[in-house]
Image (cartoon, rainbow, N blue to C red; front, side, top):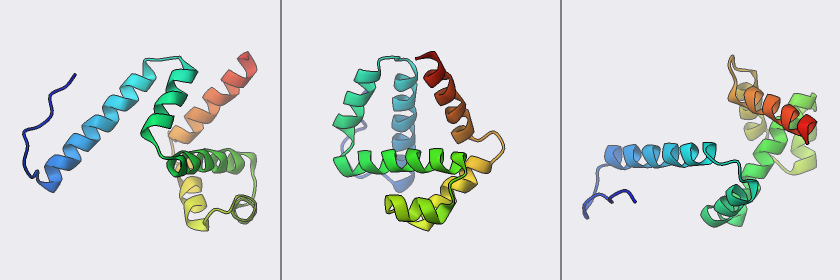
Length: 113
């Protein structure tokens, strides 16, 4: 297990650096497993029900945007803010979008199941 920093107040920049490194570490660990149940259990442990709901809704909105569902329809059907949906739309339309790459993986996963 990695060593914790010494006790005491850390600067905002130091905390940000540690948090970013920790987040990247989580991503690396998730990338190394193909155990769907383990990943589900991990998210269940690390996220509150509200946080898991938010992640699920955000992925849902990405899929709906990709299907061409109008933003206002997504907002009214799923109780989401237009700001979140607009952000999702911008991210989806960026060159080399991680959303597009994950949607492509989803198509492959669904095809292979």
